Every structure is written in C-alpha cells, then in structure tokens.
Length: 297
Image (cartoon, rainbow, N blue to C red; front, top):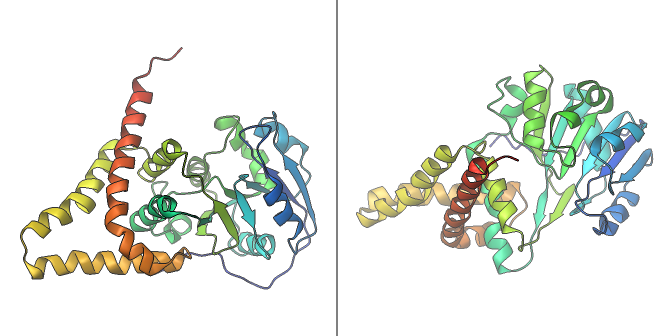
C-alpha cells in the first residue's frame, strides 16, 4: 500500500555515471543489456564489463560520481538513470537498490519466479528500509545497485564481501549499520530481468535470503502460509475459509499490480505456486544446512 516503486520525475542531470556490468563468466552474453544502455536518454556514462577482474579492480578504474551495477540478465529502459539520480539527491542516499520487473516466458517460469516478489512484499514493507534505522529491515537485489561513488569507495563495501559478487542485502545492511541512508524500490519497468528456469538451485537460495537465511523463520512461514490454510480448509467452515481466501486474493492482486504481473494469472496459479514454494524453500533450507556443516578447507 506504500507503493514502493521508482517513479518518473522528469528531471535531468549531467554528472558522470560509471556503469559496471557484473558477469559470472567471460563468455556471458551482455549484448541486450549494452544495447539498452546505449538507448538510454542519459549520455554522461562510462561502461565497464567484468571479465576476470574483481569488483574492486573495476571500481578503481571508474571516474563517475555515481556507480551503477547491473547483472547481465537485465535490460534498462528510458529514464532510469535520471530517475535514480533524482531519488539519490532528494533523500541523500548512499545506495539505492532496484528489484527488477521479471520478464518470464512459459508456464514453469510464471509459476516459480513471481514467488520472490510475493515473499518479499508480504514480509517487508519496502519503505521501512529507508525510513527505519534498524538493520533488520533490509532487502535488496544484485541486479541493479546504484551508489554514490565517493561513499562507496570510502567504505570499500566490495572488499567486505565476496570479491567476485555483490550481495545487495548485505550491502544495504552494512550501509544502515554505518548510519548511511539506503533505499530499496521496485523497478517499475525501468529495469527488466529475463529469468532462466534452469537455475532453480540459486533461486531457492534467493528465496531463503528473504528470511536472512534463517532456517527456523522460513519453516515457520511455510507452516503459517501453506500448512495453515490447508488445515483450516479441512474444517469446511465457510466463515473460517473466506478470510484466508480473501487475504490471499487481495495480496496476490496488489502484488501483481506493483510488479507488472497479470493479476488474474497470479490468482489462478497461486495453489500451484505454493506447492512449488514449499519444495523450493525446503531445497534452499537443505542446501543452507549442507553448506553450514561442510568442513572448511
């Protein structure tokens, strides 16, 4: 209800922005992203594509006043950079993360990938990331991260985490702990992410990150949201059934509108999505447990 989306502000700026495309492999295709960057209405940019360099090495090469990190699976749309800069300036932000609009094709993709938005928006009012100083109110997306370059280089967040990848949630948390302002918003079609249904293992871990990798919290959520309505339905009491059905319907419709999804499709797919959520979350929990007990070399 707080409408946590990046808006179009019709403001124009001229400071240089350094765009860093983070790739997992040297051969990863970034042509669509580079084409969309070239079509932006913002001309004061420099673009770096990661090959074998660490993030730290790339940042040291930049000369822009702002840093924009993008994943290769994204494409950006007209007006993005000006709107990011306006938001940064108005609220004096150190970091702004956008959660991209997912562009899914196929039945399986539409069953799986809306789940992350469903979890995030049900668990956390995104406005609280900026309005509250508590680090518990933290979220983020690696797909689009925008920084004040001076602050970023001062705190050297890239050296505090894995040298080959940014974990947006952890960076937002670090910024808040250092009394800096951070914000997380929905991309509102300014950034799209083309999803790959093959990589369900990493998506399971992404779902678990919505619970700060807390296995107990994730299991409690599954019990309340999935097992709870099933148990209530066995009673066949219309007065009890109508409440969860109404809440589910309203939440799916509102989240669908916020994330540019088809609301009718999301309502119809909800039972199947919950089954998939149950399986994916259990896979993520097991993977997290296996990782934690794996002996360190």
